[in-house]
Length: 257
Image (cartoon, rainbow, N blue to C red):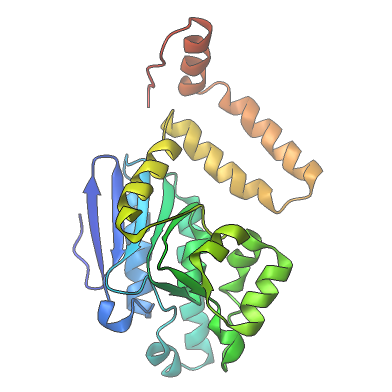
């Protein structure tokens, strides 16, 4: 895989692991770091991998935006930085692979945004989550966008207005993560969930993921209209044909993709 300054990228079988590697800066998201993450996700999205894991090196998953970078920018520069961050979040959801956050330690502000933007998330018991702008001078406006869609209005308001850290058990209860496990079981739990989430036809799964995101925020009638057309089209995919044939013939499927 490509060489980067701020991240590590490794492929193991069908899984690409992208690890934020600025431990000395608590994996804070400078423009250069965001650009590398965006490039790595785009590159991984073009491969035949079925899953992508987003992880962090060191004691913290990610502390969010790098204030040293932000403070040095004028208004146009900050807009550019936030657009880059938004592009990354959108790319994580648009790539065909299943994206799982492997969360340990703190995930705050844009770090919490990363977790909420992944398709799935597994947290260690040591993990904590916060939108700390609520108790500071720069409110977490953009991080709140995907977090709101994960946890709902009242919980978002508490997280965003207080700035308090919520523990992993609370994040699970609120719907921000899918699993909470002991720290020494984190890798095993990530692999287990990703393995189950990547079964079946790759083309079908990719279309399924992208359509889920496309319909989530639409009115119900519009969501049905979109889902109906996509599902009808998907019935003609080789994977769908094989899956139905295998069911009718009472055999295990042999996926063509």
